[in-house]
Length: 240
View 1 (cartoon, rainbow, N blue to C red):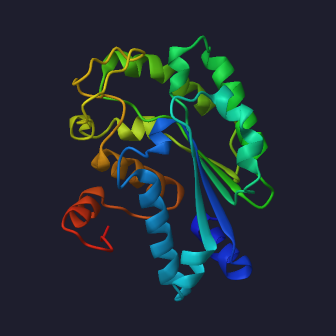
View 2: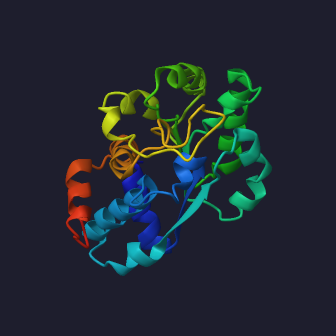
């Protein structure tokens, strides 16, 4: 069953859907608005309102939870699994942790941890969307990161566990437009204060993350440029 059909059925019958977002700072995104989490929530609710014809059902029935933890690794997320799983997610969207590259984690250990996360959070009546990490705008960083992003492709997927190759899809775009923030300084990434942060994308970059997830996992067409133009013009309900 497709995700939007599943959500429609769950909402109409139960009026109760929990979507959780898991990952590190690229998921927590308290530092940029609109961010990809907010956009995914907005678009899903808009699309389901068109189908159900009663805005209250998706607006009230869908609850989204931010379980992105800045600087976290897969081991950090596993240690907090009880805190996360009590929400009883209908759909889990996991944007793979990127901080493994700063620690003594092998790609194989990383893969095992991701498999444990999937096992702990995939319910019989729910779905798990695994997105490997987005690439940054730095060749050396991407070379290190790709070892982890590539190995999760070897995980066994089924109709309840969907894989979105965010790393590959994101690399197709003009990354210079996405990475414009000035860093406050980051020793782990060798960023000096005032230099361009090549890891954390701006609002447009977040909109493109949303595009990939919406189109690949939910089969919803999304135009990031149109959406961001609408937000900048002050439009309350931006088109996409």
